[in-house]
Image 1 (tube, helix red, strand yellow):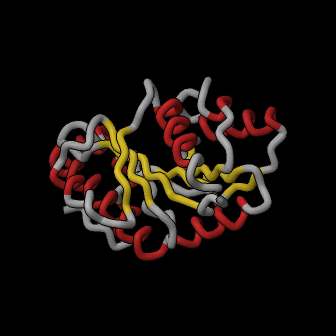
Image 2: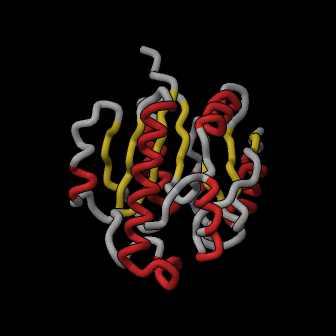
Length: 207
């Protein structure tokens, strides 16, 4: 039997006060930073449900025990999973490997890039028809999206997660694999207080 074609995997922390968007706490306070993270997560799930036209998997850490999460448990378009692994690379690798048992293509996303749109997602899936992978690089040197049809260990091991060279070390892994890949335009992700002004242009309130 042919596997369904595609799925989107979102990686998220529980939106707990003091545990998310800690670099924004000096500007927003712990409560404000957590509230913004919740808003970004809800916004992303809403536009994906409306526009992605494929199953959505929400991979959470460190648990799924949160009222906001539990209210989504019955949504047919959304499946909830607990992240597994010691670092971000291991957790992404586990999730991608699991999902590719059921789907031909997967796209991995965080919740920190409000500039990401359905058009970026559609372009990614289109490229995956002909290429081995798709990378969505971020202005800070990381990446905001990774599109895959297979899960080589080198894409997830030996990278300095959270540092400014992750996108380049991922490109080097792809080169070593002999992959043909495409890249989305450079996008910004929300990480530091100076990024907050960019939310206004997207109509995302801070309070």
